[in-house]
Image (tube, rainbow, N blue to C red; front, side, top):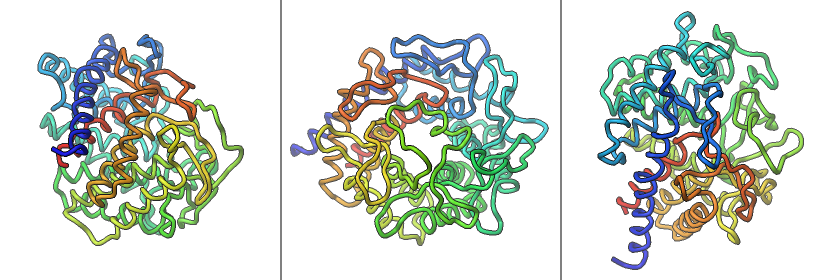
Length: 422
């Protein structure tokens, strides 16, 4: 092997050990709610679990996805525990989160399962489709695929916009669209469409049905044609019904709304997230791969997303991806979040495979070094949530209502697979 291959092989070895020996065992030990079922994800940097926290559909589904998709990385001695973790999480979700009256999955429950918020969010329902489809693929449970398909059907009935295309964002418990503004009943966003693409990709892989293939192609077209600045290569953020770009506001029941933050952008702004764009680049490529290649200029779009992030959103001095900026301007928020940096490793490595561009390989290397040095808490192998530009911890909690095994575990697993492909 040459020097480059040796370095990549060493990175893959580090990642496999991190995932199999630390990340998976950590969540197996800490997150399973043995009293009520489901998952406890609010965990501080000392590994202490907050047992009084509510359960949110996003993290519950992401944990189910993790104990399903990462099954092949589970050490032999943990296999039985890992399968139990997935099955009990699935049972809790169907018993307590599924709305038997209106259909769909509610937003939040109390720890024991009593409803805390019956709202329906397209973002949340997309993660239900994603996790349930993956659970079906790994455990061959036809009921899980049935719930994934029912959720998909509800999105087509209630969330899809048959006039302009795409999907609306927030709904009340009975699927009536929420009010406008902060409640987002009048908005569409890149975020939900990217995650719908992610979900429909795995659903189509699981079902093989033409309707799932067709809707996956449709949502890819929405993203590529309306939601990306094609000239410069960055994702726009929020839109009105007809896909006119709007200055981004904090929307109720979103990561941006709940995010504990250090640096802030004051007032609505036409922001772009560098890590989100790089994540989009590889998810777009994966969707097209599952479809067997479709007639969208996804490769051109993917390269521009990567190049824009390197030009405006990458920190070549300390390593890692900045949080937010505006179009073709210098980054505005130079804090560094875990999910953006972990997902960016996947995007840059994927870009290197497709374009053989050494800049992407170097960005992957620098990001991995930054993650190892500053994000990872060595005792547990899991990541802090937020750092300053230089790597100083700002928020060191390992898990919260939004953070579980999903971004860290998936990014490491994807990178291992890509390095093996190289």
